[in-house]
Length: 188
Image 1 (cartoon, helix red, strand yellow):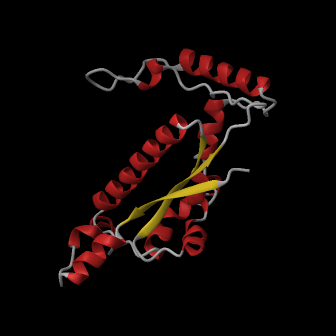
Image 2 (tube, rainbow, N blue to C red):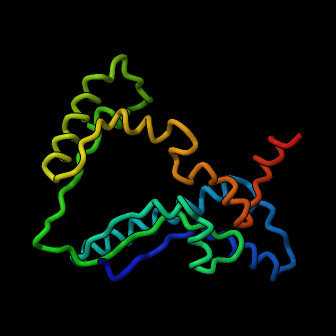
């Protein structure tokens, strides 16, 4: 069990309060780009926290599952409107008796593009190689073996497969976020 869980928030409430204190309405808060900037800022802050923690010999694990029930997380944290829990970060001391392994990632050839995005004519070889590398990792670590390419498509195969994240727009609205650029284009 890790002694520390940090939750990174997209926090637009501070700007809203500043506007109110100045008698102004920061209308730009109600555009998707502003929320996206808050999410990016949270991710950058988390990555810096990971680098700092690892420099101190600590281990970290990101917890994206908080987005499965964001309203419940917000209740626990007591967040005001216009604050959204993006993800958590568990911080603790790694157990030297159980050294962590790094899960294989897609090969660089599948994710790195130079000058322009290159859609491969056939990605079956590199995806097949990755599926096998991941199965070997799972086998070595006593995990249930799955085919990555089938699993990733299955995870996005239906709203229910998103395990609560299909409600993200609703959860954002419940947290006080209103998007003029989305709401006006989808209404009536």
